[in-house]
Image (tube, rainbow, N blue to C red):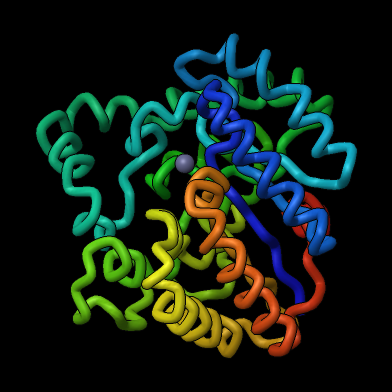
Length: 286
Ligand SMILES: [Zn+2]
């Protein structure tokens, strides 16, 4: 079975720690012979400085086979391209409060025309850096709306990976409430098509988004493999697993994260997930 290893927020911060974290994760992927797909933010707040410090690292990783795709335009708000899944309200209440307090403003910002303008700019910046067009979009915080899919189609991006399958599991990890440690998926694990024709590839939640404490490792391993097992059963042999991560969270607790991720990838290999492809390769198939 095939899988795509994705990691978000590349290029969003010019801090030396962020670049170092990226190198750490890329080196680990190289050691495991996995080509990753990194979702890149084209125009963060300090974008000139970000481009200056990031571009050599990005192009070097590209040359070694890693893939980059589009993650919002500025990623300045979880509402940049729509509203996050309601099940993330438990861990991200402020975003919903902001949306509800300024609904008219956000509804205007979420028109297909406005979103297509943002995507055209994002795509142009992407092409300037990488010399080719992005094929896949991931909305910041999985905040989406129907107009986002219309806008993606308008700019010729036909693949999105902007839905997390079971955010309840992430809420368990972040809040520690045992009642949330359950498989209550918001979406099916297999991709579907959103009007007017954009394929949505839902992804496994990043259960290590808050880092990994050494005392958490066994519980996280059990939870990750239980979530993955549900997903693999539903995907079947011809499905493609979309694995999500955040390189900066991974690197922050690398001493505990790396052995955990190694165990999870070994478990996946035992379950027949042995072929890691890039999102560009997957999107290129259709
Ligand atoms: Zn992000």
